[in-house]
Length: 227
Image (tube, rainbow, N blue to C red; front, side):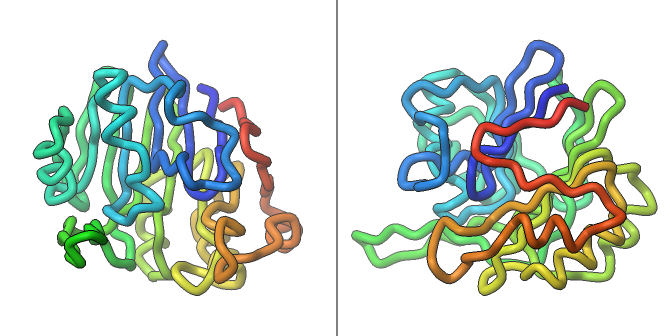
């Protein structure tokens, strides 16, 4: 399994001959190396309904005939846009032909903004994602603050690779993210959700250094880890 990071919270997983994108915020993402008009995907996994996570989902899904897996209300909304969806909810899991997906809780918000109408569409509870394939588990925490059930999630899952937000302001900052990483105790911890806008400016290398003796990696856009 090859797992790569592409700026903000964008993650790509290549496994079993399939390509899975998580939170494909590509257009308007100043830190990504991807081109939304060229990226390939068999499936798209979404943590919640904010613009910087839904991103280019509709266009990518339609162009690739990709399945979108998302929390129920968000899946319903995207289905109205002509996208093939599979709705899920927190605590639930499902085995697809590309791997197993389980949604975990996350403490954040979730709404899709229609700016011209000055309207917000509620898109359900935000979530984290545990993706499993080839005997490996990747935990993408989505946007969240620190919460004690992370300990329980870690007790029930041996996590090989953790993606943890460090940006602060909207999510955990480095201090709480370090605590979350220590609780999960993954083989690799990668920081996400930082430096794409001024309120979430952080030093990912400083964060990774703080994790010792855990193994952290501050990946540049396009950087990858083989599991």
